[in-house]
Length: 321
Image (tube, rainbow, N blue to C red; front, side, top):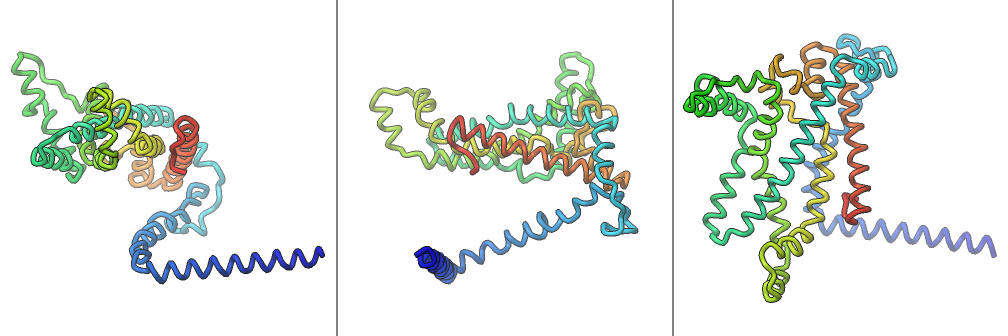
């Protein structure tokens, strides 16, 4: 009897597996054009994301360009120890976290506010113009944006210093003052990305059932109460996911823009882990140390995403998985 039961169980497993393969094959044949659309994205991740992971071993080797990855000697966690005990580690970590937190506190709500404002605009023409104007900065190169900021803050011909001079004040060299850098960088980032970031929230708002607002209006609910009790709860899943993703990028600051704006005088508040990786790897040629710092960034990002997703699931039952 025992043997018969095992044979029947194995037979059932084989049948289930065969049925699954047939269903999967049928789906591929039916929707093969949709699956073909995935090919470019899969190739992108394979070539530019998964394949470069082979180079992560550089962080554990004394890498030499002439010897190559395979022939470079293993040194274990030496470069991680050098990175953690280095002169710049605490300063870079502090600057990275502070700039990222400032971006989250100021930059995360702005696209939501923009989307809510656009959602209340009745004129389609005005709404389209407003959205276009706020989306455009996203498509401007970081080099151009940095140039605009530099010109606006110029002590000689800049708009801000022009206003200061108008009121008989002394011009301020903003980009050489460490205390102003974080505010300048955050303001520039918000101006550049807030409009484009509002697209996701605009789509989430468009998906809300209009009958909910009609029922609330009939019950005498004001616009503010409709916002609190209908709009915000309806887009809460989107807010949770976007916040989790934002927290996961806590140590990833837009180093390209920082490199374009900072200088030795502002290293105290402007130098972050990403710019340190750039200087160590590209300028100084210390690829192993740069790889160790980059791997540390990625490991922290992974921990932050998992932690924030777990907390979000417990508090709001919404998460990435």
